[in-house]
Image 1: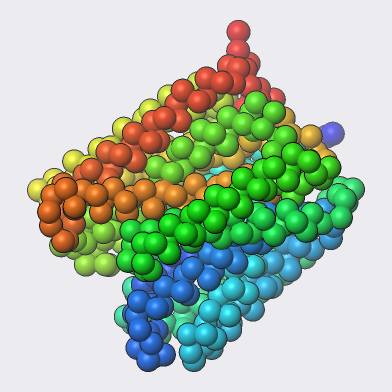
Image 2: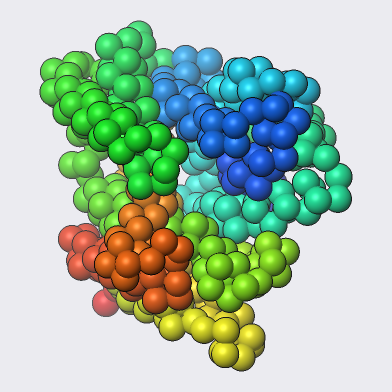
Length: 471
């Protein structure tokens, strides 16, 4: 391949990565921006504000049911076709959400929106995996790690700004021009690289995985949050766990299961999932704990809190050019090992934040935290697919995205649970700064557990992808 052809291929890969990243950013930010608008929407609907939580859980439920089927859909109809259709469905759901005049209408629109979002995330990643060469994958994945970090952080302050100065309907309407532009760009620039279709859809697996995901995610989302009685959360978790075990039994006997657990026999995929799950559980609590600590513990407004937390997003953006340098110099295993420890320490440092701290120190700690966490996600997302055969890429994206969704939701539940426990031990009804400190210490420790897991893969793992050659 000539230099001109190589440059053209790299340019197209970067363009595809940006298109996919924009779609994923739209999905990530939408899942958090709505939370700020719920009280205002409740007044317009003349509904109980507590009941408005169903607008969040309905979206979550739709994600839970649809994500496992994404790989089969991509193989059956082609990743570009499914990705483009997912953007259309998500945008249509956004339009309907913005026109809602009652809670039932909103819930139906959110279910439709969630179905589109569930397909956008794993199929978007699959599009990129089939477009990029292995040597280009780390740089491409760096674009995909930013939406996961930036969306949850800027979502709440953006929602607060929209609700305060515009109308809550703009929370959904801002997705429309982005979605329309995405459809055009996907049609023009994303290749439809399709592999041989898998066997027919595993219907029983879809049912069991849907029940498992719905029970576990909604149960984790509601436990200790006052949304529903505690026993309801317990039942949901029990049903979800039973369905998950039933699916595991089913998958070991099905020739082409929806979620293929035999992928765990591939060391790089197994380590990425195992270590990545522990790390994401810790990091998943940050968008919940940090804004609350700044507003309740520091007395900052929602807008002021948003400006502080944005430092993490800035760190994630700065990371992109550094990812390839670190991986080329140290390789995946050593980079992940050291970076896990650094990231965990920076999470734990947040436990020491106090209003008396100079603002520059807090910004620096959050900037560094965003940088190292983004590097970690980029490495996990890339090495997960380092040794996956091309014909199994769609199955890998379905399984990886499913576990990723569970781990991030678990992180929020862990953060909320530690906060509630610390408040109970301290004997006070409202969270104080020591309660938030306990939360950050716990999630830092959980993230640190990912470090020894990286030692399960060889030092020279995925050398073709990183460009690092051990001696």
